[in-house]
View 1: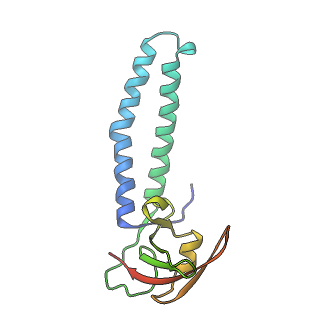
View 2: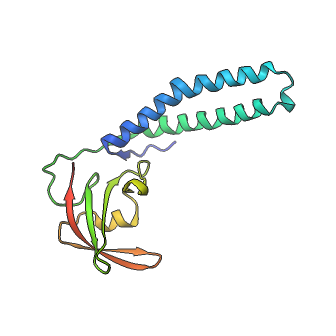
Length: 159
């Protein structure tokens, strides 16, 4: 496993810690019971319930191992409200599309926290990379499949 630190916001770290705890305390014991019940049904070579339970167990154990690794290397990065108007990790950023006038809001988070449907973009995404270090009023150019999009930074906040 890699030894690089994994950046997280406090909220993202907490969400993944809760998921890990749930997998270990609820899902793992549940799948063990399911495997035991399927074994009790006899011939394992033709037992679909057993095969499905073993496959699910593999997924759960893989996810637990992955989360254990990532959380053990977690670097929780926090910024106070007075972090200024520069875009940094954890920032909530409101953008104006210069061409269309559309407004978009994002929060820059770690790769494992990213969820575009909830406005959480990865630190390594093209948009976040274009925004890092910029201030309110600055322009950021983002290369997208449909061409370059220019955004003006309207707001930067940390809470």
